[in-house]
Image (cartoon, rainbow, N blue to C red; front, side):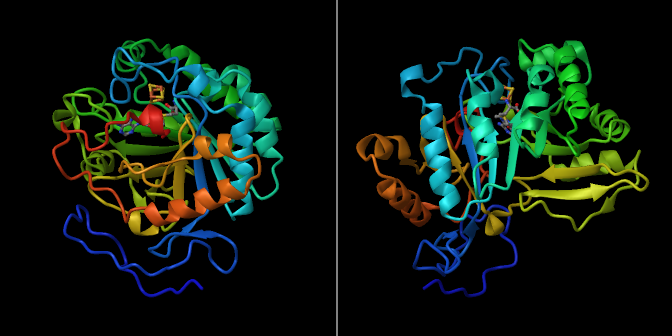
Length: 357
Ligand code: SAM
Ligand code: SF4
């Protein structure tokens, strides 16, 4: 039986010496949901359906990337099987991500089935926007509820520099197509980088307000061996101070269940979020696990422990072993990550495009 005791209200940022309390000895709550040893219910899965991408963002990938060979990538049928088992274990929210999920061949085959999967009532997608002019309508028809689109700059030249190969006009067309397809509360994701886009944060917020979008600013994380992160890191707090010079920011109590904390601008529906893996750690309320395109289940973005679900899938035709492997992963979900060390020393060698953002 799952037994709950009080956990700390919030995790201190940088908790190398922090000793969390183990409060659960089972992997399932009485209501059937997955529960880890710290008593956190796991109801949200992020599934990367490819590590490939049509961009090469400097903070996300090396210039020369080696991608997972096609034969090692989970088939779409296997992705569906894995998610079906998660749904049976009480997972209700699923984010399709990558790499760029929309460059995966036949991605819509999977997304249509996930949209109709009993139990998954919140199907969402993260995209770089480059393919959305083609895919926004079918995604909406398939039941995708919300789309997050990465946008770090509004300047074409700068966009090309950050993404190495991307075309800002395509992304802008994608944002417009998303609106035309009927999506509401589309969210922009902006990675904050000193000396690269830190003079544009207010313009990006104005763009979000003008286009009825939400926007979240993300602190850069030390995932993958990319140099120069120490000098580019900007905290959420610093950005909030900059935005406060142009906008009246009212703290909002809204919580999407994730790590973002939100502010509002009076007279606008747009939410301004801050995802602060360095300066504020919200691991104590973590409700998610991640699955890579190779079928590895990572219980934590910022740690290296994983369970290979694809091996289990290949070894067993029934879903019982898969269900057990997922439940076992609750035992290796760590209390949290600690990004407080030097940013230039990657604590996790996987790039974000591998694990899925
Ligand atoms: N290709 C899609 C996109 O760009 O939105 C989905 C995958 S991408 C890995 C998901 C998110 O991770 C993006 O918003 C991206 O900006 C963010 N990201 C990638 N590398 C990051 C890093 N090192 N630190 C913080 N955010 C990162
Ligand atoms: Fe591709 Fe997204 Fe990574 Fe940029 S952030 S390289 S768009 S996966």
